Length: 294
Image (tube, rainbow, N blue to C red):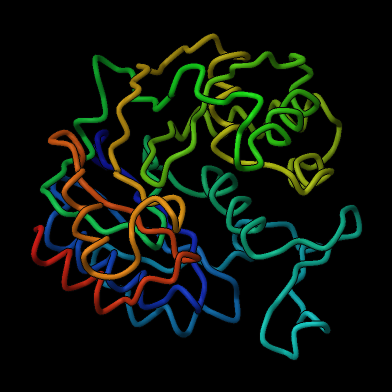
């Protein structure tokens, strides 16, 4: 295997299938170098996502990654339209919880030295070779310094508290560093070391330790492990996001003109856009505006 080969990682599900199809098409147009794309999905979504497979794209059933005691069932309060995941050791998990677990656990079953996570709602707009993420043996590591404050509008404060307990560090101080984006790179060996460390410290399977709380972020977990357990070893910090993200519905006006304003703010050193699926922009409008900008 090429030592610079990169695993592109997307955890997805059926409701994001068309967004994921758009991501795959954009990757096939713009992703350069030596890479393989792993689509991480639940067992009941495998057949659907097989349609996207190809020479560089493989669907992985979560059963290859997660322990047998993480089981998907129909949510009885959803009218049969949603799933939840049950374990003997945690409160019921939602899809976004399990998608994070798939990404964390993938490192134990692949050989590529780097994993570049791309969310389903990302679209690549410019040529990008993930081998450029390496700098003299260190991997580019996204960190926005002191970006999390006491007024954080998301769940960042709970995520920080979770990693305090998980790693026995902290308590965290504010402002704290933010590691969250929809296009970020992890070292595979570091990801394996993280899982080993969690198991050694807790005496439990890493999934059990992480899901002791449902307020967790895989990006915060990896980021704080690198910074506060490893002291940054093997990583080159960079505060420039590779992906321009539309995080909240109110950040730009709704509709094509708002999307065009968003696209106009793409920086020269950004290669992709991410439009959060919960904002519910029309996919046709997204595709049209993306084609205009590409």
